[in-house]
Amino acid sequence: MGRYFFKLLFILLIAGALITCVDPFYPRLKKFESWLVVDALLTDDNTSNYVMLTRSRESIEEDPQKVTGATVVISDDLDNSTTLTERHPGEYRTDSLTFRGSAGRTYTLSISTREGDVYISDPCTMYPVPDIDSIYFIKDQVLSEKTGETLQGVRIYIDSKGEGTSNFYRWTYDEWWKFNAPDPQTFEYINDTTIYELAELRQTCWAHKKSDVIDIRVSREDDESGFIKKPVLFVDTYTTDRFLIQYCIDVCQLSLSQQEYEFWNLMVQLNESGGDIFDKQPFQPFSNIRSISNSDEQVLGYFQVSGAKHIRKYITVREIIDLDLPLYVYECERIERGPVDYPEIKITFNQIYKSFLNSGFSFIKPTFDADGRLLRFVFVRPFCANCTVNGSLTKPYFWVDIE
Image 1 (cartoon, rainbow, N blue to C red):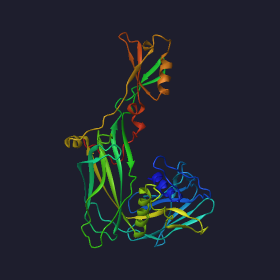
Image 2 (cartoon, helix red, strand yellow):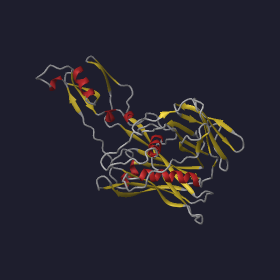
Image 3 (cartoon, rainbow, N blue to C red):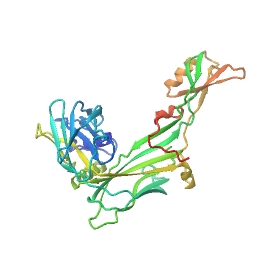
Image 4 (cartoon, rainbow, N blue to C red):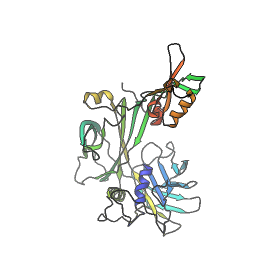
């Protein structure tokens, strides 16, 4: 969600900019200032919490500048503190074995950059969050905003009946799915005389996607029923390979303070702005982090402190078939070519190989004639030949094959 988070925050920098109904316009600001952007989340999960530090760029088309070499510390109201480790450029993590948040505690984030600038957050209390009681799915359909066609798929819901001490909530989710490359590469080509069979195919992979939507809600103070049949997401089964073998979703329910809820609500309004001249004007940046070194410096982003509860659900292809839902079909163009197909010109296997690779195809195997002589090469698109184009060969640590 980091890049999505940064793009929303970037909108705060372009007050007064107009967006046409044809092409978006990203203005170059005359008095541009690079501001620190903080995407930080602390929960009571038994996991590594993160602080992502970047600096805003003048154009949304530019990648954010990573802030490296900073000292990042989280402390609580009992004078406990932990210093985060920079795992990747601009990404700072806690050690899940030695530190985790605790509901009822109040936390403060402090950042000291390599240049000597110091930033500190407001104290943030972690509110407990009720358990998610159940997760389930049903067959559903929606109208496509792009085509107007009816899309069939599954809609996933949760029930959370408990009562928390906070009335403000946010939901996120992670998706994983197992899939196969439909026409995997079985041979490796070196030259006309060296073609060998692969010992291991890159056929089965797992894909992962994090939610990039802002899903927040306020519960009434007198409502003790919690959230019943709370929709999480809809997935069209015909346009994705998520359900061809097995799918998994992990839903996280987060508690929010009223101030953090207002931050996310602001982000929702910015994201939903249509860019018309009669729309609401962009808001002033809002953050719970400030600069100690320069009181005039603005900081973008938020130090999020939340209680968290998770629930996980697997969905198999058999369950999708039982719902009589359409399944995704790979469009894999298969081309077989050899010198025999070009009688009017003198061409080598090596030239054919290079030509098709330069055209965006992948070599998967050779074919031979009845006498065992090399006849043709077989080419397909990369995503059909190699599952790592869209996924990873590494199975998630928690994954259980249902069937």
